[in-house]
Structure formats: C-alpha cells, structure tokens
Image 1: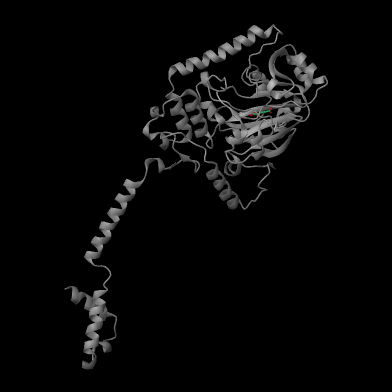
Image 2: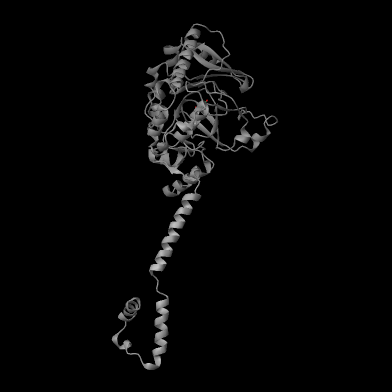
Length: 440
Ligand SMILES: O=C(O)CCC(=O)C(=O)O
C-alpha cells in the first residue's frame, strides 16, 4: 500500500511519456525508486520520534527551570516581579537597557552624562524614558502654580509669622546640624543675616504644609505624579506628603536616598539648587550609615551617607573618590524628578524656597513595598500566591490589607505624638535636640 502510494506520488507529476521506461534503464530506475522510498520524510515512525522528543524537551524545561528564575512581567512595564519569592532588587542594568531600547524607539539620543531639561513632556514619554530610569528636570509645570506667583517672604511673614517651624541650624560641618523650633518670623530674620559656608539655616519641615491644608491649594497640578499609590495607603500610615524647604545660601540636605526609596520630586519656587545625583549600585563608595530610621508612621530604613558631597573629606572618605555622579542646577520654576535608588544631595546656591514631594507609581511600587517589608520585618509569606498576577494598584491594596492592625495603630500614635510635641513646643522657643523627621 505504501509502495503503491509512493509510486503514484512519484509518477503523478511526470509526463506520460516518461512512464515508458526502456529496458536498459530499468535497473537504474528501480534504484531511483528505492532511493526515493528511503528518503520519505513523514512516516509514522518519524512522527512518533518527534512526538517523544517534544515531550522530553517540555519535561526537561519544566523540571530544570528554577522557580525563582521565572520572572513575571508586570502589566504596565517590563520590570520583573518577584516580591513573593524573595527580596526584590532594583536591577539597574536591566532598567538602563530598557531606557536604551526606549531611546532607540523614540529616535532620541540625549547626552549620556547629563540631566536634561524638558518641556511638553508627555506622561508616556516620562514613563518610558525617565521614570525609575534617569533624572529629569521639567520646566513647564511649576510656573503654572499659584505658589510660584504668590508665595513670597512677605506672604509667609504676614500669614504665618507667629507659627512655629522646624529648622536645622549648622555652625561648622553638616553633621553638626541641630534641629530647632522657632517661630517663622525669627527664621525669616535669619535669612536676612550674614551667612557663610559653615554657618547657615535650613527650614526643613515635613509637617508645615500638612498642618496648613490651605497652602496645598497653591500647589497646582502635576500630571507626571498624578498616579500616586501612596494614596492607597491607610490614612494612619500614609507618609506625610510635601516637605517645605526654605534655606539660606549654603544650606543643604544630607546625601541620602529617600524614605521607602521613593521617587523624589523637588519643585523650586524661588532660588537655585545645585544637585549631585548618584546612579544606583555605588553603596560601597558612599559610606551609608546603618540603623537609621525614617521616623514616619510606617517605619522604614533611612539611607543617609556620612559624606557631605559638597565638602568632601577625602582623607576620611577615600573611597568616595570612586563614586560617579551627575551634577545639575535647578532654577526657579523647575521641577526635578530623581528616580528610586539614586542617592542625592541638594545645595542651595542662594536663598531658596522649594517643596519636595514623593512618588510611588507603576514604575517603583515594588521598590517601595520591599522597603516596607524590610522596615517592618514583615513575612512575605502573607502575600497570596496570585499576588504577582494582580495589577500594580491592586498589589498595593492587597499588600496594605495584609498589614497587621497593630501597625496601623502604631502609625496613628506616631503622628499624634509628633503633633503633640509640636503643640507642646508651640509656645516655647527653647532648643530641642531631637532630630525630627524631615531633618535631612
Ligand atoms: O532640597 C533639598 O534640600 C533636598 C530635598 C531632597 O533631597 C528630597 O526631597 O529628597
């Protein structure tokens, strides 16, 4: 049957004439036929072999793949998701590769060692090229805010002159800074006084805007940070939003990464800041202090360097010389966005008022959740097996819902006690040495 079939097949395409084989070629013809039969491609036997091989390959892959290596892709981005299986690490090389791919897609090649100043930046382009990947300065958001137009020294003097504010005063080195509570009028008088490289004052008040919601209305829209998963946190443990930063010339922050390693967003209302921004993965050069806590209602680790990057003691910190960083100037009306994982330090090059905001969104929410796990020593076993299959905001909600009630209770107590301590000190001008949250 097989032969017959094959024979038909071989001959069916031949012109009739070729069927007439001369006896002298019969042997040759028989040999050809035999050969053609022997190279028949699809036979039941071969099919069986292919089938067995395929099954073996599938089994091999299934058994050899380490569960940890199976990277789920999040819905929004290509960031691997593995929060349930072990500590989530920001894979900086992966992120840079992603950025390079995106830059190629946009046909855009900015200088590789600069922070660009952009306007008319679409949300999609921000997510694709910068958010979680590279710092950027956006120039056309802050000028639309009422704060930019109406906040002035007089504005604060008149409306809040008598209010107590938290400030850091430095006589000497940055590390010698001491937190004080003063009324705003007194702080404003410091701004008028002589300042020097090693004698300056910085109002770094995490609670000033939170306690005066009317001031929040002066801060206008910012479409780049509208998606903010911190809003999904229960109110008791939601980090205080919007830090008020008003400093004399020479005032500066520490070199640090932000609480929960969130994305930092700084808006300069007036003045000028110089920044040093350190790409991730350089911890061995930065002399990070251990054991510091952020002091927020939901406790987290604080990553502060001992080094003042604007006054480097190279004898004490020799490895710091190896650290690589970007430098950028942020002028009045400009918004700087610093991705998670980047150590940063700001230096006020003249008297400067700015506000700092925080961002947790689709591109860094895993970093933030991991910091919460670390900060509270939570067991990731509490996360359900399907956790990674949820959309990012649902992951955040799920995560929040599994937090023990006592964490929420503690969070409320922290806020209450800080507000009480502010109230108690409202009528005092005495110094207090306690470093309050926000004293960066
Ligand atoms: O402007 C400053 O002094 C520092 C602000 C900052 O580092 C931040 O918001 O994370």
